[in-house]
Image (cartoon, rainbow, N blue to C red; front, side, top):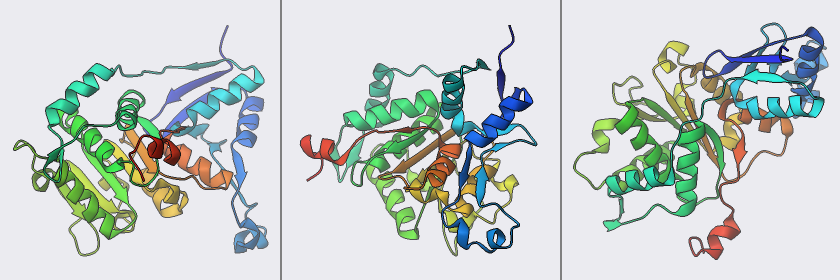
Length: 295
């Protein structure tokens, strides 16, 4: 018996759904949300636009790949069967710890260990390849980003893009990478390119750290070279410029977002889920305080 929905991955942004027309209509309604403040937008006032975003496109039968968990929920709630090939990479705690040991991680000249919540986030990223990691400020997100980048560079030779909100955070993250890299085999200046106003955007280095303002006008061809995308403070990713940048990264198989909080509006949340995947509550502030990690 054929499945009600056949879901096929098109690229790293979209999946294509084959289903009956009435199911497609239900999907469209399920993934349609009012945009915050739509009442004040001229296009709505002039009756050109209905104030909604639609994350499932009826014309192309495409949905954002990051919404697969919610697509499964849609099917389960309605009793629909679906066909979807899912491949999850095996990545054990043993392999993670062995990899961390090989990095010889340091901070301010002292040897450091990857904490449990950082290891959990790293393993999830390696297995699922996309995730929205909810973790508070000072929880060590830069170390998570560093270990993910080193894994993708050292073992898969992938090219990555990290987007941060401000120029100061570009420099801060680069400085953190310098701090962690104590071994002579990895020198950040050889592998990491920084982009912000006045800096050259093109590079052959495997990792680019940039503000979104510096890249949002670049063509899709520029973004085709990236196999991994990390967005820091991704609660800001509901903004149209960051959404467009995420759409252009059609070859970015690894997609990760870091934030301490999610937007309140459901449409903003689902915009973020669309490109980064289902959120995992990696760590809460109170948990880190109880463990003595935060004061």
